[in-house]
Length: 113
Length: 115
Image (cartoon, rainbow over all chains, first blue to last red; front, side):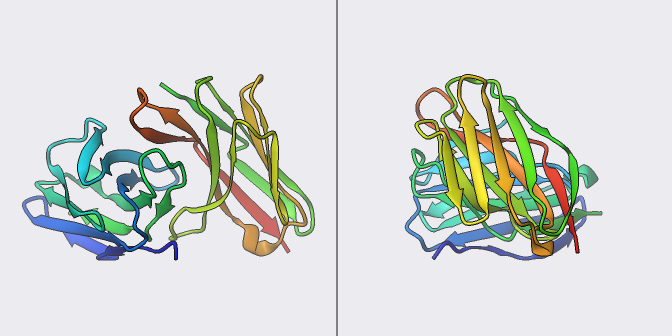
C-alpha cells in the first residue's frame, strides 16, 4: 500500500485566519515531506521530517509551521498567509531519509483571499 | 546546489508513436533519478527510477537511460496512448551533506498524445 492521505482537499482562507493541513501515512515510513506546487511548476521542497525531527527547512517563511506528532502524521499550520501562498500543498513520505523513493499524497488546494 | 534541466517543455505525439524526454543535471554526486507523472489536478506519481550503478531500466512501455559521464538521463515511452497524456517531471537526488536526501525537480514536460 503506497497510500498517503491529506485533508482537506480544498481550503479557502483569509489572510488573518489560522488553519492546518494534515497528512497521514500507514506504510511505516519514517521520513515525511511538505512541498508547495504552483500551477505549471514542479514541486518545491519546504520541510523534511526524519524520525519525527525536522531535518530540512528550506528557509520557508514563519507563517508556515510544520509539526510531526508521530511517525504517521504530519501537519502544516498556517497563519497570516499572503495571496501568493495560494498553491497545491503536497505531502510525501519515504521509508527513511536514506531511501530515495518518495510517495506523494493527493494534495490540498489552498486559496488565500 | 543541484540544477536539473528538462527538455522539451511540451511534446505532442500521435497515439502509437514514441516519446522521449531528456534531463541533464549538474551535481556529479547525484545518484538517484526518478520520473514522476502528474495528471491534471492529481498527485505526482512515481513511474520509474534509476540509480547511478545502472545504465538502463525498463518497465513495460517505459524505459529510462542514464549517462553519468555526460550527466544526462532520459525517459522513453513507446506505443504511446492517450492516457499517457500528463506532465512528466524528472528529478535528481542531492545528498545534502550526507544526512538527507532531497529531490531537485526539472521544470516538467507536458506530453499530449493525440488519438
